[in-house]
Length: 438
Image 1 (tube, rainbow, N blue to C red):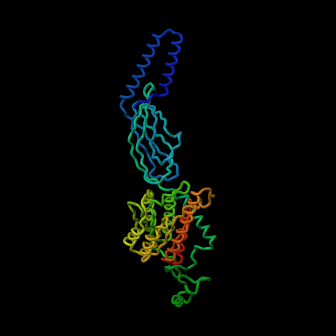
Image 2 (image 1 turned 90 degrees about the horizontal axis):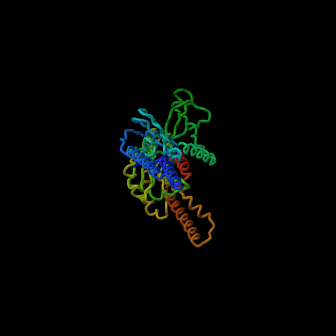
Image 3 (image 1 turned 120 degrees about the horizontal axis):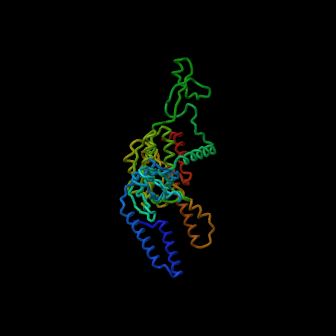
């Protein structure tokens, strides 16, 4: 399609003003009609030429290989193939979950004949997942500058948008360390202690007598100490609820995003400890299963297979998830469940976790919705508000009862705020490692 330019609009305004002037003077009507016909003919010819002129310019969008939520990135567009000097306007149809500064689009470009050019704009992803770029809208100015020829060019591309873990992990680790100090817990293992034998070394002042290897000491006529290290080569399996309960938000951040941040941070810590980390999902039509892996590959695997996870509208099926764990996880592992518990879950949840507990130690972390605490702090002014308050109190009481039932069954149960999930999971994992519970 063709669109009038500002030059044509000003020309139309000038013709209207000239018509008013001739009308007031009551003379020169024939001259005005000739002039108006001439201008109209030129405008139509310019429009016809703009419409039928072949499109010889080629465009290429250059995207970063990966994008990170909240981090501004520059998208470049290469333009080439012009046979003559062109004035262009470019508008890229970015995905709906991207923010683009208003002054960055459309892009204005004067492209000299037989030359190439490259322009760019800055955009910021606000949602993780697979982003789809579809169309580049191009407007080309006609020879006389009276019309814009508007075209939509298909430039379909996909790019992965990852969560921004860097800042989150840094601050969460600091928070976890501060919390541990306040609790009086020293996470550094005492010298020479642990689960796995590491090496023999000379006795040092302060070593426990139990660490002395008396046979080796007798051979060399000097005290020799056995040194141990924390157990390695263990496995951690994280089961993530992807059901409808995880769609809740705290301010602008979804609970599910807090869960993914916690999963990646815990995986990072566990892999640093020499353990293998895997992941399973439930409460979704297409459950994912990532076998436990060690090292940098294990973390990379989690990153590439969880960046696009989204909560569904389904209800979580705990027993079916437990059957998957029993069937797939053959080696003993620490199984961490992350979900949002309700009072109606007791009939399904407890048998499911007990089934898994026959083979694996189990920890369940349930997200605490801050909206309930906000509701309890509000002043009651009406009967509906009183009913909401009573429902919130009942919900918390039944939830507390369920948590006590789980703990009485030998299952570690954590009731945590979404913002504290990562630190609590890391602390609990380190506690389990230290106390040799798996």
